Image (cartoon, rainbow, N blue to C red; front, side, top):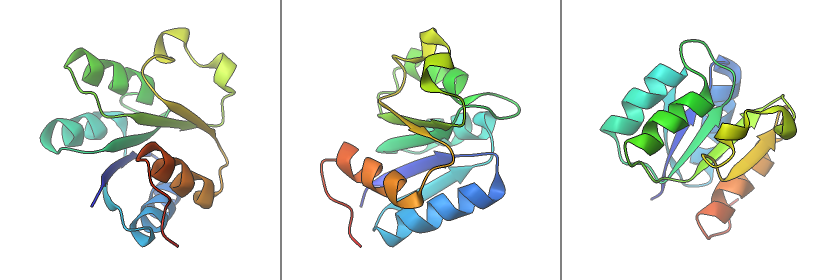
Length: 122
């Protein structure tokens, strides 16, 4: 079973994303901000990281940058209401897919499934 780390500071979005991904057969680990996401990623092996960009404590791009510097290679999806061309250029090499907010949870589940090379169940 693939393990997905969802890092999102909006509790409702975190819950919805977790439910949708769990319904597709993924094991979901969650974190409410970038610092907690960093802790979970260091402690747990995950197959994909889904992270919000703008969060308190540590933004998603900085979290991914720290992880990449430490050799963490799991693919990442960045979600945000900020247009992709306005995200920090330094961050574009840190993630594999951009999903604009507000997003349909089905699109998120399909994106995770495609990154894992399988179609999501459901």
